[in-house]
Length: 272
Image (cartoon, rainbow, N blue to C red; front, side, top):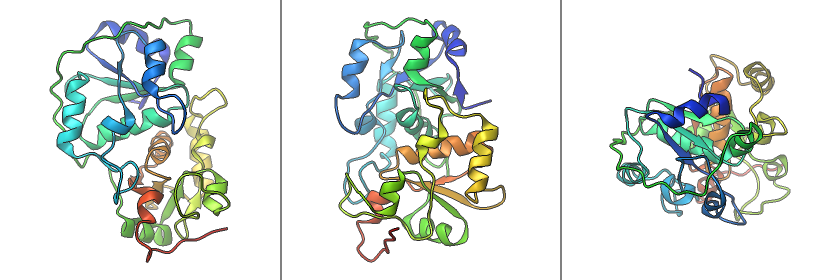
């Protein structure tokens, strides 16, 4: 089953046993909850990326993995159950939704799908939005870590040398020409730049699997070669992992990503 779902496929599920999470999030600007209150898919519950899908920022990076008990409590509060599908969406390009998809998969949920094209695709299909905020019944999801492969900093460095480590950030940040967020600019030596913006079409929907497969193969990510991904803090890299899965290329996530890498001054930094 594809990890993506279309608006037409989602519509009938709203009347059945499923949980829909609105994961709209911006690195800067209005918070996602404000957009959610202005209108969302009927029955959707707001999921806060910073609070629900990450631990406290610090030595582990800006968006480290949440502790299992923290994540479990958050998902139960949002009504997530282990025996019913979860559909996640954001504004359009699935950047934030992919983080929810990945963390739910990592903690063992068996059935998580991303609304391709997000709320934009939903409204463009003429489907309704509402300002009504539901009160979900307590969920029973049990968070068990280990459902998706992860990389430590040392493993990411080794993979960059002996496999393919994709840097999902914009080219300018990879090159070290600019760094608007983290205190050090550059990239992990031998990592290959693969901006997540190129995983989607202009409207926000993912490119088809064949396009994505050709894209990643051109970067050296081929079947049989160990593949990993990182970004600034483990959010857009989850989008890369999703795109790689669509392409049939399983990959591991360096969750702490660049914001964790640079916490140790002994780790090398490459530019250019």
